[in-house]
Image 1 (spheres, rainbow, N blue to C red):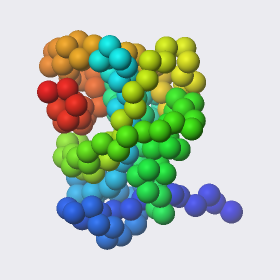
Image 2 (cartoon, rainbow, N blue to C red):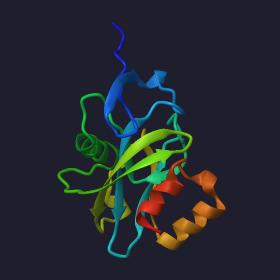
Image 3 (cartoon, one colour):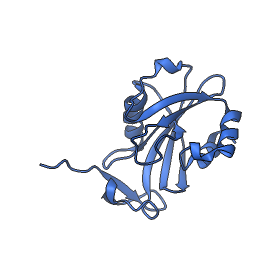
Image 4 (tube, rainbow, N blue to C red):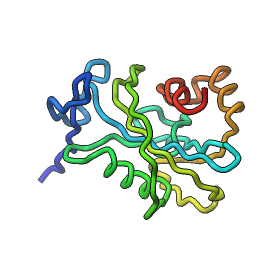
Amino acid sequence: MAKEMVKLPIVDENDNIIAHKERNTLDYQKDIYRISALWIENSKGEILLAKRAAIKTQDPNKWGPAVAGTVDKGESYEQNITKEAEEELGLKDIEFQKGPKTRVKSKYNYFCQWFILKTDKGLSEFKIEQDEVSEIKWWAKEELKEQLKANPELFVSGMKQHIKVFVE
């Protein structure tokens, strides 16, 4: 029996679910889907970013939020970020603060519900899932802004919109 593809909620401009589609049938320019993302900052004001694994179909080998995931059918933004934080960085039993929800229109078309975590964990304290993340790094805000301006190709397609929420 073939493995059933996970379906994703497709939403309207107000983030109301209007349909469900298998990921491989999405029209990324037209269909609006949902992601959750975790913005992690330490007491020095540095931001933890994750470099996506080379095997990822969307934005491989690019720097993006420390944790991010596409919300599946039947899953809330909160359930998704809890699952993704454990899968990608080994974060369990942590309390996030709910942040803003943004609408991103770039190469992809989605709502992003942000969650915020303040922590002073060292890089070695995170358990990286190599199929998801190839590397993590604490970035100073100025360094991040400079690199994003000078080398935007190093970052996920929505990163300019993402940092406006927290950095500028």
